[in-house]
Length: 323
Ligand code: F6P
Image (cartoon, rainbow, N blue to C red; front, side, top):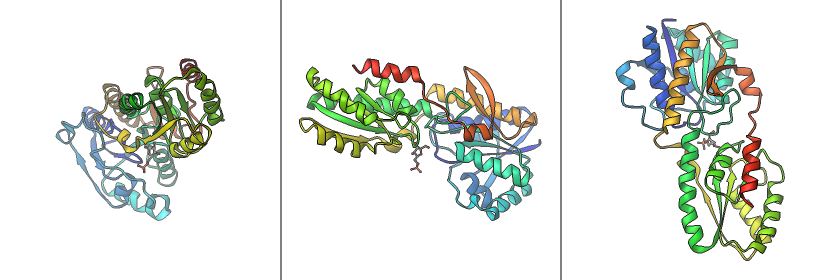
């Protein structure tokens, strides 16, 4: 391949810039040109793309967000949108794509290949860490550390006022951030979408706890928790325990920004480079990931259809430590 395209799509995540940089520099190493496509699939449809050279990716490794911007394109879900996108790629002589994003990004790439034969390699970029085929996604480590920093701060004020704090962290359908930031932040309870009857367990825990008379508590709730959001859970909790002074804090998009951690920069650099190498080796419809510290390829269909499970040992640990 003489020319490939790179884009970021879906929710941004810290480390995406480091990944773009690795794609451009690795492609240059193999004498391949890179076109940067802005705003993901939407930019492809609107012909919003330009050559990325080495100098264009200098001094970006330390920044969160994505220099290529990102979008969740509704137009790409139509056949007409995909045809326009294909015509623009052809016009620019793009022979393959590196797609940085989550399962929606992979689904788009797979459909695009089926219809127009454009080969793609996916790179997992989402703070949620909910992608099958990789132990870690780009941005997850930063998000956990950002959430942890917020939890530590809230802990100070929770302690001073003897309050029960419900802290909601991101994770649309998954509890990876909640479980890890919860354990690291010494949460008393953690509520995850992957675990049923969390709320019941929380109630029994506090029924026992009231005998122990601990003064303040931190409860971490994953955004996708099935029993409701942090406000709803706090309300139900208050109805049971009117003696507690309760507050809710939703951390939200703070977790999506900021300087990527060293781990995220290294992961992004490793996977961006591996994606280019795979594409140039003729691999397609696969995504790169890191499994047990080794770079692995997983088919798009497995990454989309299989579910990554939370670490059962960590979940058990969280329960042991909260006693
Ligand atoms: O998928 C990443 C994520 O940050 C989820 O944790 C969250 O539910 C969602 O994106 C928020 O999306 P938006 O930025 O469109 O509100």
